[in-house]
Image 1 (tube, rainbow, N blue to C red):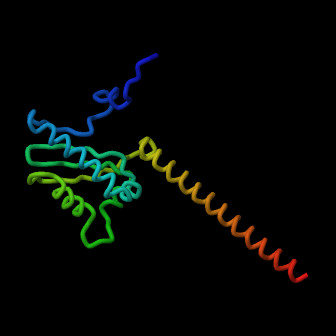
Image 2: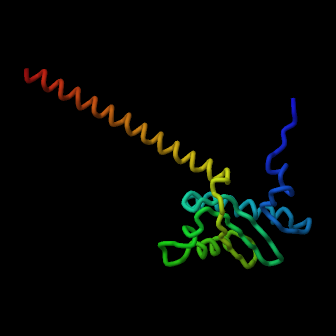
Image 3: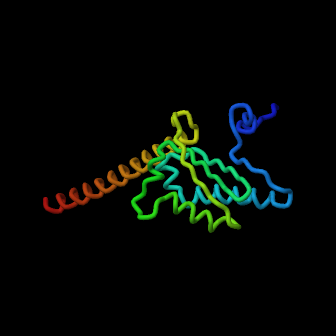
Amino acid sequence: MGQKTHPTGFRIGVNKTQSSTWFANYSAFSDVLKEDYQIRQFFEKEFSALYNKAGIAKLEIKRKVNQLELLIYAARPKSIASSSDDEGTILKLQSKLKKLLSGSKQIRIKVLQINKSENESSLVARSLGDQLEKQLLLEKQSVKQHKCFRIVELKVLKFKSQVD
């Protein structure tokens, strides 16, 4: 049986970069790693609609001493920047991230556009999943409508038989 390698781990340093870039002391390493994990989970839970709307492919976290830089790679970055609310989406993100993170850090958020979104596997997989969900919903609706029509047909047949 052959050994399998993780595709991302195999490519890091060759044609992919790390998803987080920072240095920490031995005592602070676990805290910083936990914060990175919390940031990624926060994005997946709180902004799941934004993930689909903007086509967010990846988040990159870069840390300096008292500064956190969050790079958001999106297929449609204008949908992140524009918002119907008075307060912009990026400002909401910054305020919620400050509450989430420990300590006072300066948070900078940059939204970068992906040139060829069809080359991003996560975006392609998400769009295929959405298309399949829509198709399943359509099939369920058509089955429900078919059942309703059959019930109406049976009632009409019963009514006709009673009239005759």
